[in-house]
Length: 446
Ligand SMILES: Nc1ncnc2c1ncn2[C@@H]1O[C@H](COP(=O)(O)OP(=O)(O)OP(=O)(O)O)[C@@H](O)[C@H]1O
Ligand SMILES: [Mg+2]
Image (cartoon, rainbow, N blue to C red; front, side, top):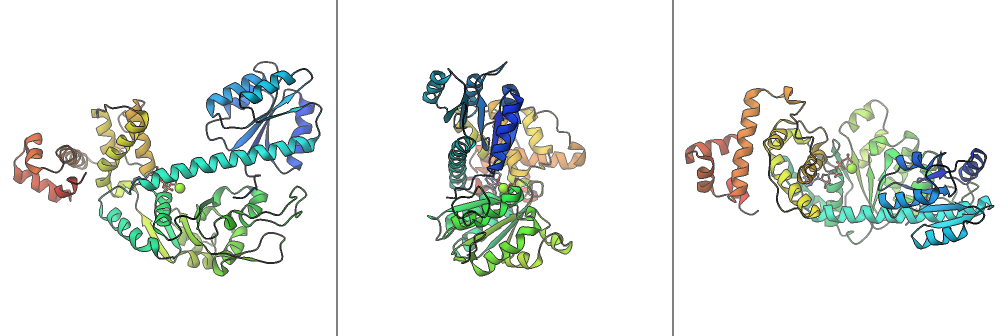
């Protein structure tokens, strides 16, 4: 695991402008990405669960004070590290706050170095927490199979089986929320590397001037605050899988260095003399259109050809609407389990949304919709705004198809019982199966 943490944020809260400015400057010099806040309320507003950073706050402030802020942050996400700055006479309070889970406190006056050291520890701590959460979520996701019986998804499942244990690099293309990361994890799970790290790197949100050090690692002292040498994300994936997410967002300036890693299977830490040999598999993900970016000179063609050994394309959900009912049922189950809600009733508004919506956010959007539906939060049950795009006959046949699929789900593939349920003769039902490519047997195994 790398100890390089400058990609995380530091929120600095202090009502005193002079102190605020001095500390922010010192922290920035130490290489941190700092946002300053004059009031606790404003900082709180900018925070949410899974915040990728730490909070440093003065205790004494007008309005919400630092301890109250700490309490509120604990409600949002108890694992966000909070460092308290204490004045004269606040030490007892600060010690109590430590007991309650504050990360650290520094007593005024303090040396800039001291605050920076504590901040670095807090950020490292936060990074580990976030990585663990992410890995847990990935493990959850990988345990659940790729849902869908549309031809495209059936083929994809088959290819994953085949390509998974072949140790080849893979490029996955698909719109947002189509399941690129899920597929990448599945490929890793199927490979001989499965017990080794799966290291995701979001190439579109690498932290500015630190991006190279973050990715490739660095020798000591190439920047004033880098006191010891450190491996980067790429090195961390050695013997495992490097997942280059949103590769289409990678700055051109970094692409040459990355090409070398992929071609030579070695990495040269910034400022180091000798490269390190790597054993890794590279899986990259991109939005559709990487080839066009190459033509437009926005993406290096040599890198593209290196990545494009095996390409998997995941079609958007609107092009495989057959998968919607099954995915929805799957996510409703997942949501019900997580929220410990037993009863779920599909309303007419929900059904209508499932049928009419175009799902620009693809499977992720559908999953969110299912969770909202189970938790009863859905505004999404309102008439869909994009219904204008489908014609009436289209809507009617989608609706019909949904009802047929639901009947088969309910009867676990029994055609006679589905006929009864829908009140249609067998022949009519079989016609509908044919028109919608429905295979009743596939509902039996569920
Ligand atoms: N076919 C599927 N079966 C089950 N779950 C799926 C399927 N496709 C996607 N998901 C789920 O949908 C969500 C979004 O998928 P994922 O994060 O892999 O998408 P993505 O293509 O990486 O999106 P983005 O480009 O926005 O990062 C995840 O919760 C994933 O587990
Ligand atoms: Mg993704």
